Amino acid sequence: MTTLVVFIVVLIAALLIGTPIAFGLILSGIAMMWWLGMLDWQLIALQMTNGADSFPLLAIPFFLLAGEAMNVGGLSRRLVNFGLTLVGHLKGGLGYVAIVTALLLASLSGSAIADTAVLAGMLIPIMRDAGYNLGRSAGLISAGGIIAPVLPPSIGYIVFGVAGGVSITRLFMAGIVPGLLMALSLAVAWWLLSRKENTAVLPRSSWKDVGKAAIDAGFAFMLPVIIIGGLKAGIFTPTEAGVVACVYALFIGCFVYREISLVKLYHCFVSAVLTTSAVMLLVAGASITAYMIAIANIPAEIVGWLGPLRESPLLLMAVMLLLLIVIGTALDFIPTILIMTPVLLPIAKQAGIDPVYFGVMFIMTAAISLITPPVGAVLNVACAVAKVRYMDVVRGAVPFIIAQFAVLVLLWLFPQIVIVPARWLY
Image 1 (cartoon, rainbow, N blue to C red):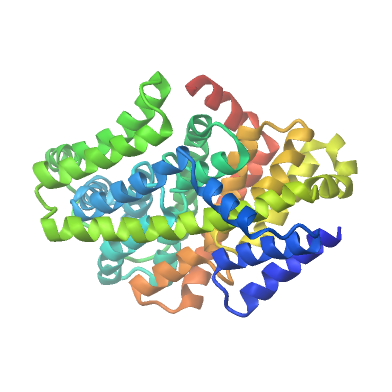
Image 2: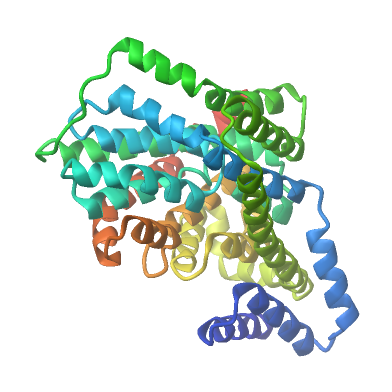
């Protein structure tokens, strides 16, 4: 109990004084070592090295580079154009374009922040000219952006799978239906909100134009088919899928669309390296914390507190999800996974909860936290790109946050919605 208090106090204190979360994790791990009388600097270095030395984690830089190549190489723009020709003529059509494109981008990149930045940059100017409420539009785009961590290929699943020893391929397959349901819930919410608004609509595109846009975006459509098909057929692992996605996106951007110059290619690599280094430092720092959490037997202590709930997995799951929601309002996506996975996953396993199902619910909850204030990293991205006040974006996002939570509750009440399709796909 005292070790847990030391961990929480040191981590919160580090965050309050503005310490980067990676260093806060390292400090909290060192504090637990000191408290238990086993402070060993060589062990700290060893754990950080071992934590980052993981073959599945190699997928992260490759998927990040693939996402950068897709944005710079024109794949993302062609997906937006396809959405405009397909549903841009409907009442509130630009909102449906945002949802459709968010779903398509999510199946390519796995990064909520990157997808939100691309969507906001491309669609907000068009929505502004058409008379849409910018706060609500930015809120919708933010809510669409968080589909990316839930739908494969997701960096969140990779980190969770490594931290918890859960099959990443199974997590990828299990995330398909929840990701689709999230998009559907946004479409329903947008329909309810936009039907009474007086906004301009785009001219209806002919089926010939829709077909041309679909053909133009055909190479982008092929990427998720290649990834999911390859994983299901056992042709490659999730890490190798990252390499395939990276090579494919670079090849299409450089040699088919010919939009990636040497200068743009350099910036793609630099951006991917910077993001990867930040994620890997978090992973290395969290490995010390996870090691000390296991040594101090903290999961067993928490099991003791939640002991009565183990007889009711449904209630236990609800308590853990509520805990993740509260933590997610203060912590970013990856730190939440790294800190809470070694604590909560053993409890879920002891209660008989499927670890793959738990992983999907964990990632979905952490993703929704990206659009919940006061932090709301994705909200901040949409706010900055759209040049809209933060509180306007928050108010605009509320209906879509409710819609995403409704999906979360549905999957909590009926786990088979996740488990059955996952088993069939795998």
